[in-house]
Length: 226
Image (cartoon, rainbow, N blue to C red; front, side, top):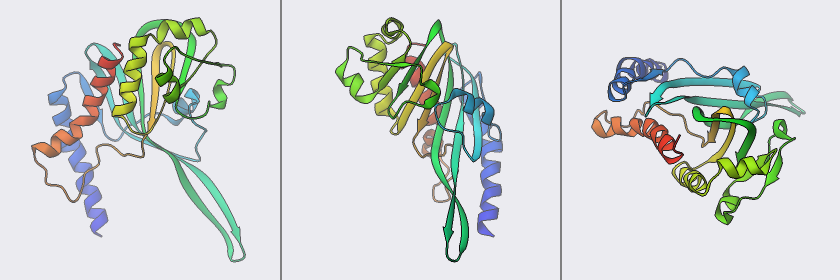
């Protein structure tokens, strides 16, 4: 009973308080708590395997510093069937919980560049691994593309430093792909943004805690000089 009541408070908090607060502090940014990315779109990026269960919410979209962006929470789960002498049980294991981002890279690009902290997704099997000039960068990220000259063109020393800084600011596994004029990024940090806590007083420090998610978008735009 308590959980059902709190869920109603949580929804009201997002729509009646957090939405106008975000849009007041960041003109040009729209917050839609009930909306998210489409599963077909997320699957088309190929950064993670297709889920058996998918949920997305807390869509932020608009412009910051003249850069168009969209981001939202994404949760993906895999179905597991267990057979025992007592019967069959089905469980769902979460393998991605975090945020997906879309940025206008402002640099039309013919090739595709993939950066990942984990193994190369099967959707990008044609891309070849490239060693960049920064040893520190190579320790953190694996770089894949069709033409290494294009990777050197995009991943300048300044951009590589920006990605290393971005990795420090965002604990969790980062994967991103640059293609066309867009950059798509996934941060698997096991976090659910904009969720109301039952144990915190709603004051200015509480509001600032939620604004960190939007500030992180601004930091990505600034760090990467989008």
